Amino acid sequence: MERRWLATAAAPVLLVASVLLIGSLAHNLARLDTGAELLPPSPETRFAPAAIAGYGDDFAYASFGASLFWDTRDMPGYPRRGSLIQGDLRQFLGLGAGDPGFRRFGIELQNALPLPGHDHGLAMRFRADWLDHGSETEIPFFFTRGLGGSHSLRGFPLNRFRGENLVLATVEYRAAILPGKLDAVVFWDTGGAYRSFSDMRLGGLEHSFGAGIRVLRRDRILLRLEVAQGSEGPQFLVSFSKPF
Image (cartoon, rainbow, N blue to C red; front, side, top):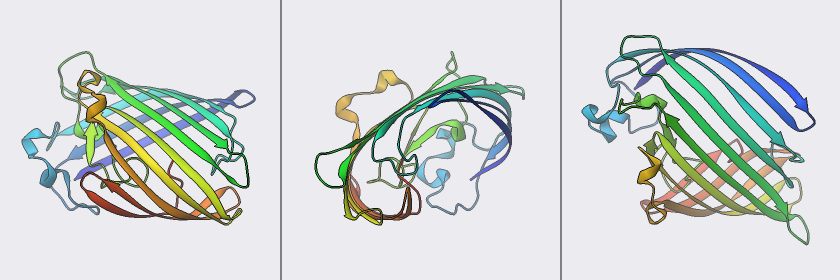
């Protein structure tokens, strides 16, 4: 179980039309140890505690970073056309003895493309995150990224795969049943989480595919019901937010 205290502050700056820069500061105190998880299985039941970096230890970090957005989507809550390009950079400073410092980088690309005809189109996403710590020091488990669940590899449980670096790609086909009120979707997700990008192999990526319906209100999702199939069996998903 992870226990975390976090204080953060952020300041957005509109540079030009469709371009936004957000700077932020944070202070983080955390501990990962045995306890009850609301969403099982907990880390110590999925992995041996000795294999969990930082298990049973206390950590203190300060961090600062910035995110740069270029956004031309017509409705960010549930776009029908337009693109998003987002870059993230965050520096983590260890405040305790032995707390390793590191940097996190991220890039997110999204595109919504209407197709000829009536109220249908494609939505595509690519995401990559990686850590740079310049040593063999293990980064605490709770700073790694996870794949699985209703917002990434939907054919797998939440955070089924974790690593310091990850890649994720999604393609969705969306078609209106009741325009502006109800959509049907089919989708394909693929991705992987790694200790290092040198471990990544295209043949080793995980895949999931599925279908669902979405209850809409103008530019946002009220309810999302999906079923997805991965290599470990089906997942049935209920969510009240967009998938990406």
